[in-house]
Amino acid sequence: MQLPQLGASATFDQACASVLAYLHTAIPMGFWSVTRHTEGDQLYLAVEDSSYGKQAGDSHRWSDSMCQHMLTGDGPQIAPDVQQVASYATAGVRQSLPIRAYVGLPLHQADGEIFGTLCGLDPQAQPAELAQHGPLLQILAQLLSTILQADLMRTQAQQAAERSATSAETDALTGLFNRRGWDRLLAAEEARYRRFGHTGSVIIMDLDSLKLVNDRDGHHSGDAHIRQAARAIVETTRDSDIVARLGGDEFGILAANANSRQAQHLVDRLSAQLTRVGTPGSIGHAPYTIISGFPGAWQNADAAMYEQKRLRRAAAPTADATGHTPQDSL
Image (tube, rainbow, N blue to C red):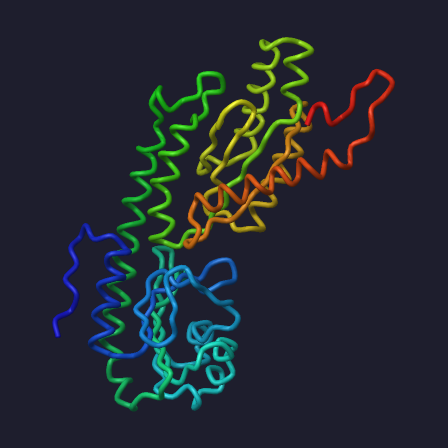
C-alpha cells in the first residue's frame, strides 16, 4: 500500500487525517489517534476509531496514559500484548478502555520538546509480527513532526499579518480591536486551536464604575475612565494575547497558550491592576476546548463574569446616609 502523499503546503490536520486513514487500513488496529500532551491531559486531536467510540476533542489524564511510560522508556513503542508489560498492564486508562495492544511514537516540536504522540490501541492482543511495523511507524511519526513544524511556522507568520488591524476593526476610543476585529481573529484562531490542540482561555471583564462616572462627571470623564482601563489591560497582558473592547465598558481577551492556572494568574493580575488605577471590574474566564470552541469558552467566561458581579453585589454594604450604595457602581 502506498504511503500518504503530502505536499509541502499540507496543514497538520490534513496530514493527521491522511496518516490515520492509511494506518487504519495498513495496520488495522481498532483505534488510531494523533494526541497532544497538554495541561495534564492526553488530548485526541485526530481519531480513526472503530472500537472505543472516541472522537477528536476527547481526552484522559496524562498520568493514566500508556504514552507517558513509552516516553520515559518504561515500555516499548510497540506492545502486541500489554499484559506482558507491567507499566502498560497497570495503566489507569485501562480502567475505562479495554486495551490489549498498544502502539505509541513521539511527535516532537522544533525545540525537541514533546508535542504529543501517534498512538494505536486495540481491544485484542495482536500477533508478535506487529513489531515489524516499527520502521514504517517511525517514518510516519517523523513525517507528522516535520509537517507540524512547517505549519506552526506558517501560522506564526499569518498571525502577525492578521493582527495588523484595519481602521474598521479598531476601537476609536481605546485603539484596541473592536467587536468586528475580535470576531474575525477568534474565527481565525478557532481553526488553528483545533488543528494543534493549543491551550488558551477567553477572559471577559465588565467595568464597575462607568455609569457612576458618567452620571457624576459626564461622558467625557467616562471616556477617560474607559481609556484608563484599556491602558491597564494592555500593560498587564502579553503581546501574544488578543485584547478587544467589545462595547461599552466590556472587554475581551484571548489569552493565547494559557492553561487554566495561567489564566487565573492573569485574571488576578488584571483585577489588581484595574483596581490600582481606579477602574475596577468584574472578570470571568473559561478555557478553550475543541468540543465547545471559542463560542463556548466566551459564553462560559461571560457567565463567570456575571456570577462574580452578582456575588460582589450581594456582599456589598447597604446604602449610606447619602443614599449611595457600592452596588450603584457595579
